[in-house]
Image (cartoon, rainbow, N blue to C red):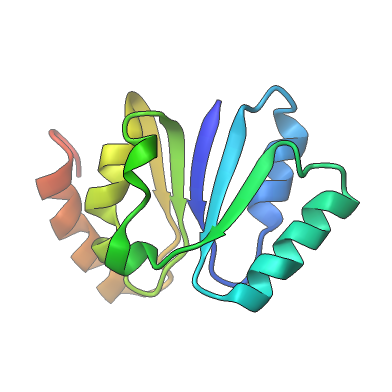
Length: 125
């Protein structure tokens, strides 16, 4: 299993997924904050998950996910203030039967994301 995640201020989902699926190939985490990147790495090393989880600094909303992972993700998790900006890139990362999950607490986020989902995914929404 290969998972891409864009985390904002927490990494509990990555830790949970890695514990549940120890056969996990890799979790690719991206954050815009170098301080959090260092905290993530320390936490994953302390919990013996560093072989399952990689972290990197990248503006997923602006740059998208790295092209090298195109078509390889079983799942993509987004926790962003403007998730609709990352949805086209997330769609490219997913395998054909992959899953996209976006945490959006505001109805405005949901509405804008749904508009982009209809463009980026055939038969979605």
